Length: 243
Image (cartoon, rainbow, N blue to C red; front, side, top):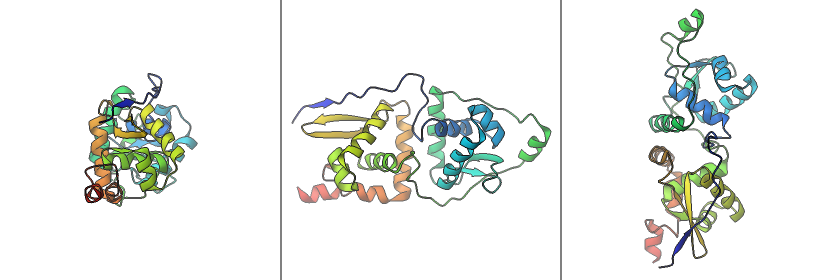
């Protein structure tokens, strides 16, 4: 058996917010919703995130389209926003966000200061659609999303296998793998000429992330089917049949 060598990728700076779902603002917004057990007003989100309404609205538009967040009023009138409890992977998503928040604490907002908002929130149950939307932008870009879900479905794969199975070019997969490794989400090893990719069990939210990804794989079915085409993963039917 050939020895493997861990591929070193410089980690992101300490104290930087996670870039799992986006470039920072999206992750912070989701964590903020996860740790505050009530719908939040748009103005509250903007204050807590130190961001302007345009950026927050743009972020909410994507998350609403994905079905991850729900709004008490039709878009673009984002008045009260909450995580969508009808999202097919809501329980593992909530657990993942709360674990991520431990390393990047978000503000606990408490009750709204104004009586009118408190009355509006009384009995308000924000639930969006349970239909699973196109998840290609869930982890910011289609490439990051699809490669991460494929790695979770395959359990262990490599760059060549991802390129061959998913139709991506080598450079794109390397760039995506570098991003996820820099975030600490995956680990990679050089085995001969192969770069083996796996979820990193040392990641601070490894258990919760794996459960969330596995739930997405189950409800979409697409990635489990793609992983079954793998020629590198010895658990797949194709590998067993081709031996």
